[in-house]
Image 1: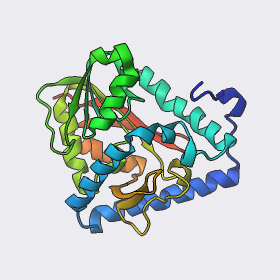
Image 2 (image 1 turned 90 degrees about the vertical axis):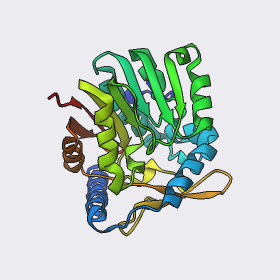
Image 3 (image 1 turned 60 degrees about the vertical axis):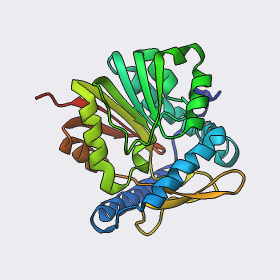
Image 4 (image 1 turned 90 degrees about the horizontal axis):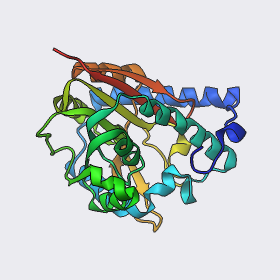
Amino acid sequence: MIGGVDRQLFGSALSAASQTHIKLFSRIQQGRAKLRAMNEPPVPDAVIESQILYYQARAVEYDEWFYRKGRYDYGEASNARWFAEAEEPIEALARMPQSAEVLEFAPGTGIWTERLAGMAAHVTAVDSSAEMLAINRAKLGALAEKVTYVEADIFQWQPDRLYDMVFFGFWLSHVPVERVRDFFDKVASALRPGGSLFFVDGRPEPTVTAADQQHPENGSQIMTRKLNDGRTFQVVKNFYATDDMERRFSDSGLRVEVRETATFFVYGFGAKVSG
């Protein structure tokens, strides 16, 4: 059970027609991602700065998204599917090997940090938002003693040690296409030989985001995000086909199996290739 919803009661499958629509929409968005890699100019630094400011400002309302509240509430049936599907990556993460040292990129408010701290001896959590990290620390309570919080721009930060596992949740889609290789190289450089990796993100389904905003159109990497008070920010938002992600991981020496849930999530797990 997650978010107070019993998936046995509400976890019914989508209709065949709805599933077909979702798959078609996903293929279109993923095809656009491939075109971006070839044709799109690099994301301006101003957009990266806007993205950082957005998550700093959004910290106090961030959990409304995951727990399907306010502008992210699509009704009982849709919310129930969300929580039921969220169990899939949660359970997959729980099956990962126990790790002494875990590095988490973009920990946000601690939705995943809490789980990682329960699995590992120590977690290093790197995020550009002091506001997010403060909420994360408060949410974890006593578990926060197992976490070292680092406020830093993930694109600029470099690991100074090796970790047994690297995790990033709902971060990859905010990495510009032209920076993905550098980020995956950074992940690989932070892992011990044979060290493990896990990530989770959203699929290009319209109801993953708020009802009053849309994913990028016309092949753009940039979308406009809105806060509850009406302020708007530009952020990066990219989607990738599963085989494209696996190839990109492999190019950086990471063997990762990528899976999708029926509607909302994509996740992957694997390891650094030794030697």
